Amino acid sequence: MKPAVITPTRVVIALCLVAPFVAMLWVGSYAKTDPALMGIPFFYWYQLLWVPISAVLTMIAYQLWRRDQRARRGGGAAE
Amino acid sequence: MAGTAMTATFLAVLAGASLLAVTARRLRPNDRLPSLEGWALADRSLGPWWTWVLLGGTIFTAYTFTAVPGLAYGNGAPAFFAVPYTVLVCPLVFVLLARLWTVARRHGYITVADFVRGRYGSPPLALVVALTGILATMPYLALQLLGIRAVLTAGGMYPGGVTGDLVMAALFAGLAVATYRHGLRAPTVISALKAVAVFVSLTAVTWLVLVRLGGPGAIFEGAAQQLGSPALLLSPAHQPAYATLALGSALALLMYPHVLTAGFASDGSRTLRKTAVALPVWTGLLALFGFLGIAALAVGVRAPEGAAEAAVPMLVDRLMPGALAGLVFGAITVGALVPAAVMSIAAATSFVRNVYVEYVHPTATPKRQVRVAKSVSLTAKVGAVAFVFGLRDQDAVNLQLLGGVWILQIFPAVAVGLYTRWLHPRALLAGWGVGMVAGTFLVVREGFSPIVPIGTDAGSLEIYVGLVALLLNLTVAVAGSVALERLHVPRGADLTDLPPRLTVRRRPETGANNP
Image 1: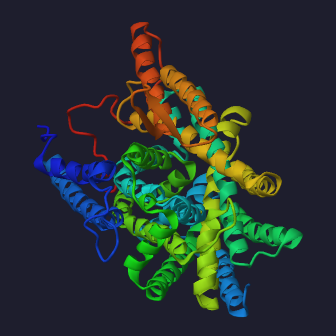
Image 2: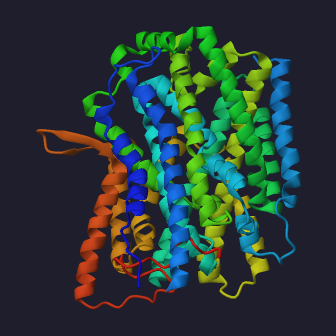
Image 3: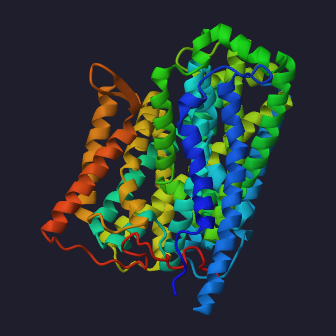
């Protein structure tokens, strides 16, 4: 009767939300000067790049979550 | 010095804010009887756009907009921890704040301490959560005033002596009256102006700076020469501090009463999730401010000793045409008013709900609750003004640093409580106590530095005090819960409909509350 809890959709949602934590807290991966972009050290432009990336990831999570909710509500009615 | 054009645009921005404040009453009006929900949460009626401007305008305070470039100007790379910090806030809003909203809406909770009271059935724990919130918010409120003063002084727009203080007091008084009358609706409408003013002025300033200084490459090169090359890069020794500051600050932010108040005012958990998608735009703004700090270094702005936050206003004053500079200063001033108002509302609401009604006057009518909350919010603002005039600026900065460490200590009760009720309220109280004492002790011992060296002599790791205290707190809470469970110490009833444990079953319709 109960829908499965860990669905592929939910795993993807979780990954989208966890990815910024991994990328941003792993400071060693971006604390360097090269490759520079237009003279901006890697350290700065990489972090700035993560601002739009995190927005896109959250957007994906939001869309998937909405779909998940709709599916669930439909499933709930069938129960 | 301040030219006519600068003063004119500056005053125009402030006048716009005052005019907007008068129209606040018309924002999603209804004719319900006065209630705390109406005054403090705008009847939980804000859609995605208003939630985005209010939440963004509340999180990104004027202090942030002056402190981050100040830090970048003084220290270089470490200042940019604010970028990962505010990037991480978005997934946290998506998950934690949205879930908290759903519980709060369903049970009519207005403060986070209401939730803790309902979840654990423990009045002392709720009191502790409320008081921690108030204590952490007050110095933050004072800092908003300091932010305004720093910016205006550096721009040459702050009249010296008593006149300046009077201008400041008058500005704050206007805001206090609007907040008194319209509650959260006042900062909400002003935050729309804040968003527009900050975005327009900052885009223009950044563009001008890039053009005048010959592109980003030249700026970073110039700054590297001024500061000494390695300062623009994090050394491996600084990396743990950078990461833990970002994580700790992000977790702490979601516990601040003003952020929760702004979040609770939205009209749905779906709205909050949508807002989380767009919040990084504000982060981009903050990064640009940090970049201006680097630019100030490159130009060779000489900020006065111990006042690095003056660097960017001085840069703006030096490079920008008067009208644009006035717009920037106006934007930052309005930028301080929004969080200041929300903070005073949040502190007042916590006081009324979790201290006044709980312990002083349990039968207070909603009308009376609103009246008390209004006067407390006034008192909070007067207190902040007195604080700024009475104490050294550094005291407010130090207290705000402590406030961040303190507010993190309610994280186990609130955030863990959203998912499981397994932690015992008494163990949470003990953990909170340990975290508060240890955090305060460490901060004071390090001479008010947010970073402590942890570890053996061989290899010590520098990390954020708040996280150290939070780990101690969690350890005590978990160990205490195990012990109390063994001893069968009873706990209060759970009045929420959240699942008591984190189960592998389907969660009861989280977020799907709007059929």
